[in-house]
Image (tube, rainbow, N blue to C red; front, side, top):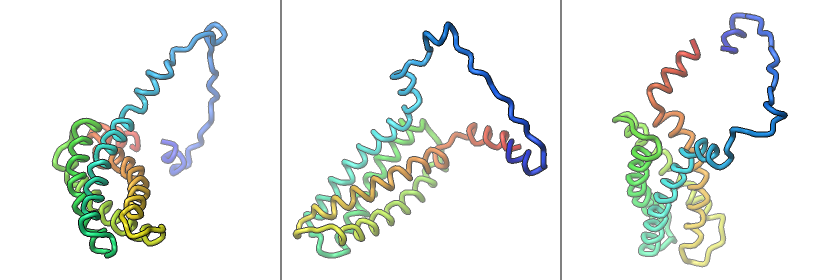
Length: 180
């Protein structure tokens, strides 16, 4: 609304809103733990889903690296593709059913696109960071690199999934109506 006012050169006058305290602010209806949990519940569920998927992803990645070795680029990329594909199935299912409570085919297609971009970035950046970290021939350096890269991608992915992939139609329609 403010952007529209600016666009049409409508003058906006700021009105101060007084804060009213009952009984000198002796009590509050805000319950710190319960209200905070309600506010952050979706992110905590997303984090739980991410932790489960992370365990699946890292365990598979580490197992494949141990079997193939980490001395060639192909082993890191192959381990990333396999581990990410299987953990993505787990992650999509949890996010779809538990975190964001539903969606249709569109969510699957959007999540699939995010998955592909994230997998490519994870593989490329993990290999890049692996070459920066000291290693002594075992898979510790690639695993640590993968954890650092994937944590960063996790934070970015939450915002994308919340604001784009699993956004409810009512939220989209409400936002469109607010812009009008």
